[in-house]
Length: 154
Image (cartoon, rainbow, N blue to C red):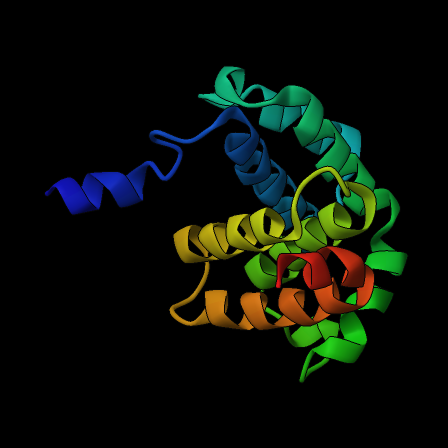
């Protein structure tokens, strides 16, 4: 029973920044499916249970930044995926947008943290092997976007 309750509440024992990523994922998922206005989605998410424990500033940056830069983020992802963007599951698509946005625009967050967070989000919300796919794509993207950081880590 403990295992089920953990899956029912993936936010349990998470950092405010991780919670921000979870809420941004929910918002991007909703946006991908409905193309609803980002402001409406933002207001809805901010009213959700547990949002007060999230890093609201990081949520704002991720949700609005990923929607604003979606064409640029997709352009970075497209050469690294083995299918069209439209064939990605909405969860994988949203997580890849978040991870790509953080890799490109938040150099203060180590690339390993960005990838690990994306993998954890996909494990919590995505399909069975989706996290492996997300890991592979973001690993390749990090190699091209942050070569100095990766070289320094070896």
